[in-house]
Length: 374
Ligand code: B12
Ligand code: SF4
Ligand code: SF4
Image 1 (spheres, rainbow, N blue to C red):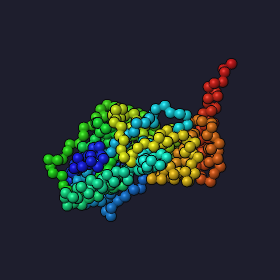
Image 2: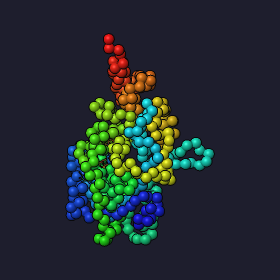
Image 3: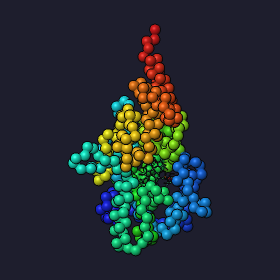
Image 4: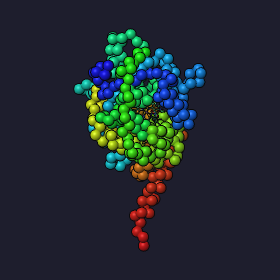
């Protein structure tokens, strides 16, 4: 199976047994998930709170929604690109789009630039190839998922030996780091005892760089995230206005956030991958905020239809851009922000008003700093 997963284009794969709540580890995972949702950590991500007819959270155990599940094949794809990181120096007024959302593919010799792709589709295609190979060898039930399945993929990845959960809650592999995307095949095939893997050892040690670097204090404890504070949640999932106290810490991130992975020592030597359908689109690395701000509906569609960025829609992307403009302190953004401030979209107008205030405050502070003291 592992060779076939590599043949399908994955970098690492393993199988996790599904034993149900009689198993101590699965019981603990279920308790953690329930406690996480009950504590309000999922914010407005209602799909994480779905329950079955008995009121049990669907994602609290694989067998809750899929009673015939006996194993989960977990595959991981390295998407690291040879490109800067969000913490590196960048041009003034550049925003940040998360690394996983840069992906694109070549569309032939005539085309200009790469066409957008989305990892969901890229991984699902690879999983389906593996699933077909499995069915040609054995009779079994299977379901392929990337993100959308009723299970916590990271927990399955640990049990399958793909990696360990870092203190930033990401799955880390000793050789590949954490720039990994996960895809799973839930199967009805039991895992023979001799193939049951021990989860990968925890190699975070005493390091706390990710926790220290998180600007919004979303990592409330090692391996525990309050997703409602995470910039990835705020920029991608959160509808409406973003809480004021979190806007300044958002910095220049306009879609997703890579900070807690950029600072991780295990990513320092992470190998670069050049995968079909997952090439980095150079325009999305350190994108100029005014370029994103100037996108009309047609431009947005041209650049982001079929990309993960499509999920956030143009309206929310512009809300995020307004906040990033405010955080930049650049007075050249004032005309754009004033135009948004006078527009009909209330959330965008309010975010722009906040950003104008930020820029004026920063400009005044700069003038105070440079004024001669006589
Ligand atoms: C909802 C979601 C989010 C939310 C919430 C994230 C979160 N940490 O829960 C938001 C929008 C914030 C988010 C952000 C990102 N996400 Co996301 N997300 C998901 C999704 C759809 C569900 C996750 C979930 O169920 N969360 C609930 C909590 C309880 O689970 P968890 O954090 O995943 O892991 C818990 C368990 O592992 C358990 N646990 C296991 N062992 C131990 C040990 C101890 C001691 C403790 C206390 C807990 C513990 O507790 C962990 C923390 O609570 C998954 C796909 C899936 N179906 O699983 C992708 C997924 C987790 N996301 C992914 C990615 C790539 C990202 C981003 C990097 C994107 C970006 N650049 O912006 C960031 C990373 C932020 C971060 N530091 O985690 C990848 C992660 C790959 C990897 N290498 O880990 C996944 C697996 C998607 C995929 N198919 O590849 N995401
Ligand atoms: S992705 Fe960003 S905001 Fe979210 S936990 Fe990591 S550093 Fe914090
Ligand atoms: S930064 Fe340090 S603590 Fe955080 S995941 Fe990486 S090794 Fe673990």
